[in-house]
Figure 1 (cartoon, one colour):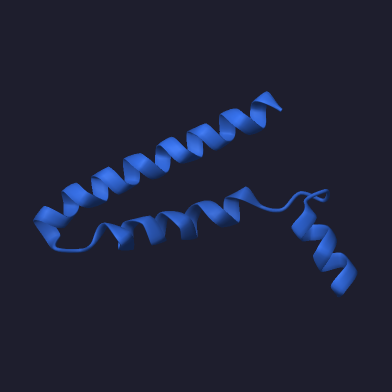
Figure 2 (cartoon, rainbow, N blue to C red):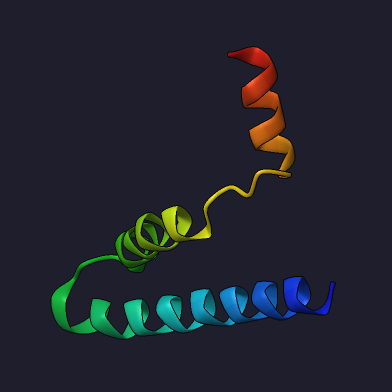
Length: 64
């Protein structure tokens, strides 16, 4: 349980940092911070993966 909470807090903190850095980059490049957050999501989400016991995985197994 503690590892899940710690992982969540680390992910939340990383998202805030990426948003802040994206905002700082916006002033230089005019690329909105949402673009950086989307790229961060594309990188992080596959790394999270789905464990065998996750509800999403069980639904997928039942449906298909």
